Image 1 (cartoon, rainbow, N blue to C red):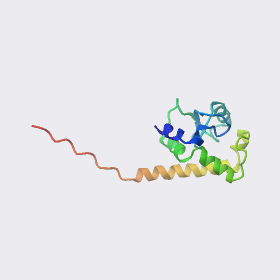
Image 2: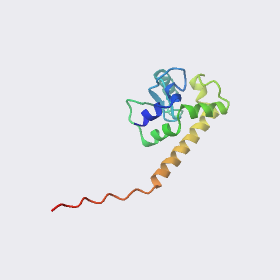
Image 3: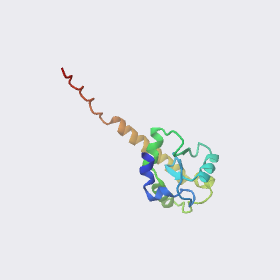
Image 4: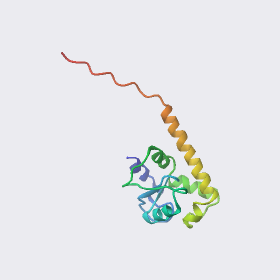
Length: 135
């Protein structure tokens, strides 16, 4: 349900790293959707830079899902471009090791932590009263 909603956004229908359409992989670290080829490239970079998951085949933690909800290709593209990374199709080992990428990763992680803390602190509704027994 989460990914169906996120795929409805036009920006998420194209890989963040190349022009490939219908990406089926994602970097939960950056909250972006990527194609299979770019997923392989990101995996080679190592999990200290980016953590890649299959949208269809992998299990996702609440933190990873929140990263995708708060991130998205549009937000990442805008951030990278505003901070001087204008060629988003440059080599992945260069793009994801830039100060811009490192700052974006930290800011997104903080946003995720804040969002999950806020959700955890929200009051939970009281349990429903048991149904009355019919005699």
